[in-house]
Length: 191
Image (cartoon, rainbow, N blue to C red; front, side):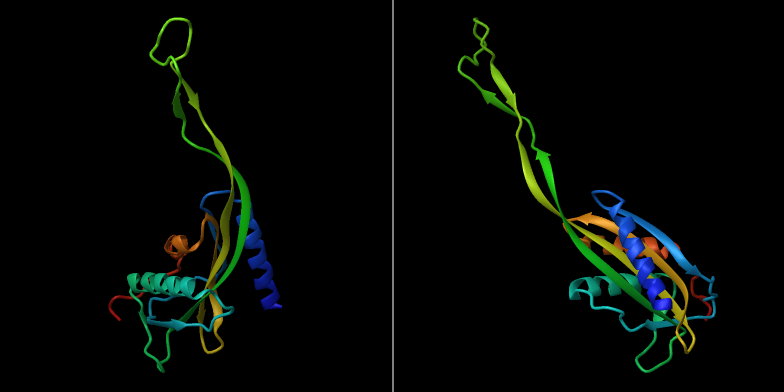
């Protein structure tokens, strides 16, 4: 039941990204927020992946998430040691191709008689041209989870949905940063 709910929320988030329009549009929302108290927490570790993500994007996401956690005073638990909380993500990507008409810059075309002579001959013509191009957009829905306890109970979950021309990889840092703006806590620096 919980898995189908998460799947349905992910699909709804991806559908919402379609409505955001062209360029790099995004939205963040928190779906599960039990306001966990992380003040006593110091270490974190990764939850197992929920789906395979392209290696390049996985590395970018993991680096951005780890950087945000370090910035908030948390450190990654050493291998084999228990962590105070677990962090995981899921990313759904969809590539969309859109036919766009793009108009280039105006150009000046000199003509015979462009010396400005008499007789009504114009000196030059201003011309523009339009091209039809196939433009690729990546639509993505990124989910960030924070889990605690032996049963890995999800206590905080946030979604970012976005659409970017040419690829989502260049927007990973921005997406993770926006998710962490809603992150529930910071580490206690005295621990």
